[in-house]
Length: 110
Image (cartoon, rainbow, N blue to C red; front, side, top):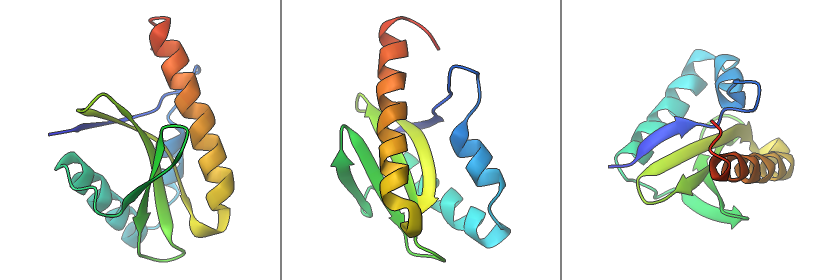
């Protein structure tokens, strides 16, 4: 079963956690359910958006999205969360974070 982790920037902060903390309770519940489904290996609402980044669509509210990368077969790194309204901006940001994650991993940084 895959393990889901949050991307942590060079300052030790999780941009996804910050986004998640600002959600209202019903939206947070839907996002939590989507993450749990990924942990169970269910990627039915997932598609690639380029640069090694994937998008998980959540059919709720403004069309929430989760963006993540796969570090091997068993580790999923959540890079960002957002909505349909900011989709392209969120994809670009997730791609930057994914490149940063891979670069720091190669250097042995956390």
